[in-house]
Length: 324
Ligand SMILES: CC(C)(COP(=O)(O)OP(=O)(O)OC[C@H]1O[C@@H](n2cnc3c(N)ncnc32)[C@H](O)[C@@H]1OP(=O)(O)O)[C@@H](O)C(=O)NCCC(=O)NCCS
Image 1 (cartoon, helix red, strand yellow):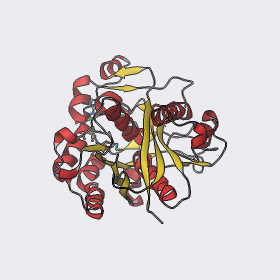
Image 2 (image 1 turned 90 degrees about the vertical axis):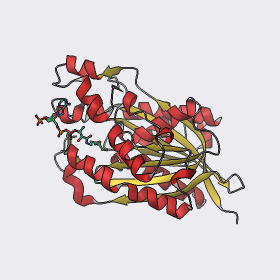
Image 3 (image 1 turned 30 degrees about the vertical axis):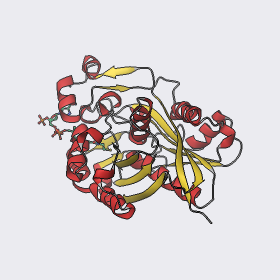
Image 4 (image 1 turned 90 degrees about the horizontal axis):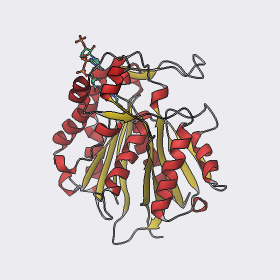
């Protein structure tokens, strides 16, 4: 039997209309400045969801945009994975709410929680189902409303995050000379780092949602020092190098982390897709949002070799190499 590959056939995104600039945060009474935020993180603005814009609402719009680009209808989808740490409810899953909102009646849907690494985990998971015949077409979504779990009294964290959603459609196709599809993925986690980035509540502990807490310097150090291992492994297992990459689309948390990682790996700066300036850190949504931005402005084209990579709370981290 021919080898099945998970090929990207559509990509889309949705951002809430409300844009909040760094200056607007300072005007709201947060003791910060545009200069401090830009210099430390590269972030200039973020989108913030309105009261009725839940994670499933954002995710549904991104998923619809991805289906439109693919020229597919919801009925063509038999797997929905939503990577999120800000689900509408503890249960049912946000993925099932998106499935229902799109009118998908078959297949199966579930949420995947690996914080900012969620989208990479979701791509790797969907790829396992598609490449083994467990599903034919998957919507892989990253959707978040982090504005609801940041502590707006804590300037060290609240300035960093934003809301949004992005999605891709993966289709199982027999591998051919085009070599398109998810070529490899590499996932890691190390739960000993829990205290460096976590939410101080939950249904099974406090019975509340809780707020995001972070030791920024520790996260920064780990992100720059350790996450390159998964990228190097993805290069090794696929027999590619940094020179072969067309685009590097990392999790958009901090411009300094992104550039330091690219430099360490020998990835040329012009291959790095950056959206952190416009979106802030949208956690699991950041990579598909960046993919959709680079797709819609004509940078990512069919046949391009694209590396996605992320690190999130846990810590969790991972990379996937995709021939678009
Ligand atoms: C959060 C981060 C930007 C902070 O940058 P930093 O250079 O480490 O800054 P520090 O935390 O050491 O703080 C430096 C000073 O700025 C102050 N500061 C913190 N937040 C501030 C803000 N929003 N505006 C102005 N000043 C601020 C601090 O209070 C501190 O003041 P002090 O020296 O008087 O105590 C940086 O650590 C970072 O990006 N970490 C990674 C975070 C991340 O990406 N997380 C998500 C991963 S998925």
